[in-house]
Length: 73
Image 1 (cartoon, rainbow, N blue to C red):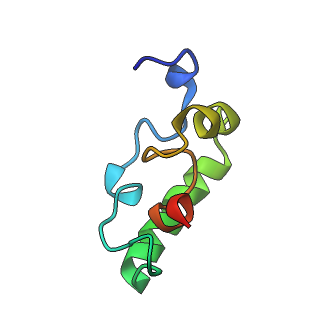
Image 2: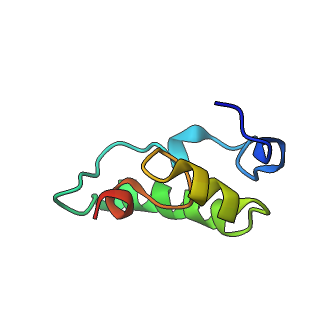
């Protein structure tokens, strides 16, 4: 799905591993390494000019400045 705000997203040149790091589940917090990657990803999201639109449009998906554990908790 194409979103009008997409060209402005801050993460477009970033390593997607920061946002999709394996190791977290809805039932338990992630390990330290996974949390570190997620925290780095969230720092990028925090400065994004379209974070509000991204979070609104992608809730439940793998975006929006929330890590896997936060999305499902």
